[in-house]
Image (tube, rainbow, N blue to C red; front, top):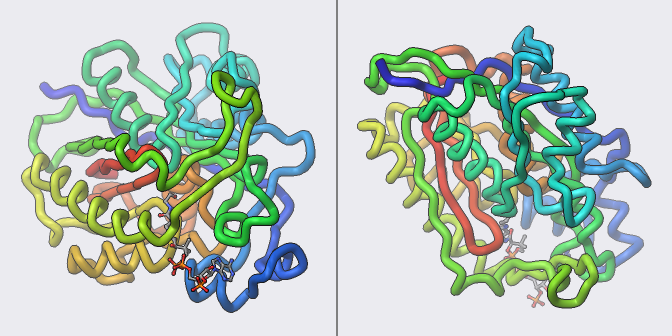
Length: 324
Ligand code: UT7
């Protein structure tokens, strides 16, 4: 028997306020046309004043619990992937634990920026595989709008807020790649590229929160290369190839990166989940948001082979192959 972590439920939450590209035309020298053609983004959601990452995460978690037909008491652990915590500490995950009314188990955050959800999934899988937990809420949640410099056109137009949640549950598998659940994963980071995407503040340096700085063009080229590489590594570990994939659910940073990676892998865009037009780049929230939207639209179905991949600040990147 192999302990597999299977997906039992998925849900998401998006803040009410939708911000169209035209909003930025009054702030910086940009246009709806530039944003659409260079990034694929048409709109994004921004959290309301006072709305926090943990509040959004709680709503996404509640949607996932409902989707799974589970209650909070069924959950053993919560992992929140976020770069925009409510406070420097305690973890956003413990705030979510409290917000859900969960009085046992454990909760912690994972910080790998846009790759955070992939890192969180791999951690959750390890906890389930080793018997530390049977059911884990894995959440990606961000209020990235709070890190934006609204005078920097090269970054402010790209990001959005939101939260997505997945419930993983221990399941007896056979150990073959026909099993449901997480089949393989691949994680990487390279701190030499830390200046490509970073926030220029923090508790031990400036004592401020800081704003996003990005060398978009360099990161763009690195992204397609690294994402294709990590996808192939995960698939190889699972004994599968590009042709076996039913759905790629990529990090939603830029439609051109998504298309470039799919093309390199020979996967037609009909088999790629794309939400970047509606959400912008929501960092660690983008993959669970895309998974939730895709399931609610009836695209991803039980038994489908799903590949998720992401890259972000660090640089940190990775992928997970799972059977839904
Ligand atoms: O989630 C983590 C991972 N993130 C990413 O992977 C992001 C990767 N990078 C990207 O998505 C793209 O590089 C961007 C969308 C950020 C930029 O697209 P690009 O095609 O790489 O443009 P560029 O940075 O080479 O800039 C081209 C031009 C520049 O003007 P000049 O120097 O050619 O005169 C920029 O100043 O576009 C200018 N520009 C803008 N123009 C209008 C940059 N931002 C804007 C803007 N509106 N918002």
